[in-house]
Length: 290
Image 1 (tube, rainbow, N blue to C red):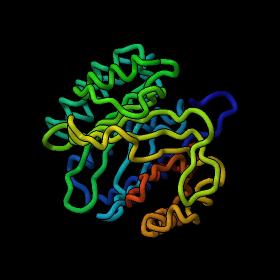
Image 2 (image 1 turned 90 degrees about the vertical axis):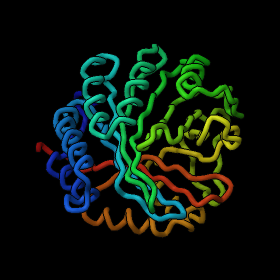
Image 3 (image 1 turned 180 degrees about the vertical axis):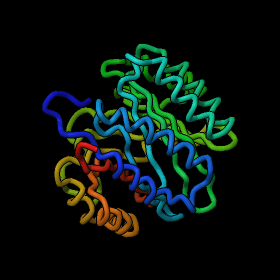
Image 4 (image 1 turned 120 degrees about the vertical axis):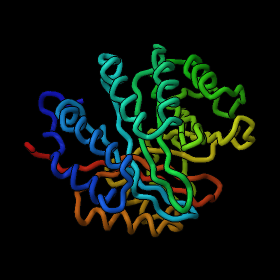
């Protein structure tokens, strides 16, 4: 949240330019353009009060690199529940019936006192896969077992995980044209610092990700990815480490974009056990009066 003495807000015209670089108007669908126009219209106001709420991302897997991705956080959700609810429903309704139904389920669950805020996102996807709307519930610190109980009720699965005793930080839902396409539980790491094979740098604020592809998914039991903060020069160290050797295309794509925009990498997710999967989350870091 912006406060007295905080840096100036992100320059709005540069945020629009970044949107157009990632979603070129002549290569974007009508629903994408409507959604992005609505998001930037909201951002024009919210950027004056909150920082790092419009987060862009890239994802690389065996199918290639997807740059057409973003998420939008509503840190004022608890204090402005009705306003945020109207916005979330309007954005979801523009993405089709599946997204609209999912948004209503998420917003009902978000009435729980365990929920701190909601986030909405979109990913076009790589290869021939369908685009996905993305919905997140971020839980309060100290929510305890109630957070996991709410997540399981929303997902409709009692399946346990090896991380159930850890604090549940985030629930993420991926929604495609046919409805729920997958879910992720993000558990906060507790104890000695987490380690990542091929990377010797510090791993800050690690989260263990359990991915659920269907209610009986056996892979859900153990974490498939680790998510962590990129503090200071951590991204530079990670980018040059063996851990990112399989992701040269993603590194080049981010460096190329950084040649036109000042970007700040915030978090990364890496697949465990050698799977070819990287997500990089970043924000525009160009600030000024406009």
